Image 1 (cartoon, rainbow, N blue to C red):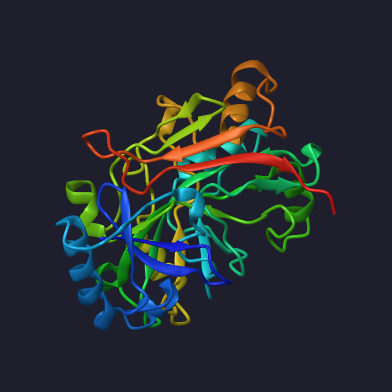
Image 2 (image 1 turned 90 degrees about the vertical axis):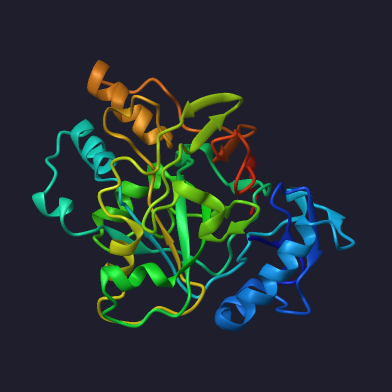
Length: 326
């Protein structure tokens, strides 16, 4: 099943989208918003699936689907936690600046709570005041949960993953060092996060979903050139069930919690990278300094994940960087 939110007020209008992402029908009679659907998922899922089946069977009057009309599928969330599940990425970044990787990073996940008061749509501009801030994209996979009890086991965490997405977790790289030096985490360096046009239920991924991670390449394309297509199922040190177990250690998670994988990365980066910071780290290690610049105003970033038949699963994130003037 594929679900989207059309732009309407703060929380959007929930719609069911056809498997090929060509048509949609309103789901307002079942749940007006994505959050409302997740709040009572046990009741709403079956009704939404019936609508999805009828849509795909051509039994319903439907409307052409255009990602430009979409907000983020969940326009705002009570809880957004981003991980760094690909420790090979962290290792590379630290190596580029001559720092060792603590051994604990391989056994204890890195996570932080991000800004979830407003996510943005797949075709919305990335608005940034200054290019000097070091504008970078980060292509990730995410899961969305129902209510998760505190202390949930890794095995039981599987049953709480209800939807999946891909996202662009924009980073302002040149603001990060100053923030981390305060030892209090990211804030100014993390503007709004954008999401794919649709959230999908795990069954839409077929054999590529094993209940814990997605084993397909995630494509990052900057100005028409592929920067990288690493496989999201390779070198994921902490899978999504382990991340859920970690973040629910001392408190429960509310329905609609979004958990990101962190930048998808494969050891050696043989299929490229899902962020420019990694590209620059590889250049620094090889040549002593980076040669690839961060993003500029007017740049276009596209992020997509395709099935084995070459068809998009989540729809494409397609954004341009635009200067914001206060």
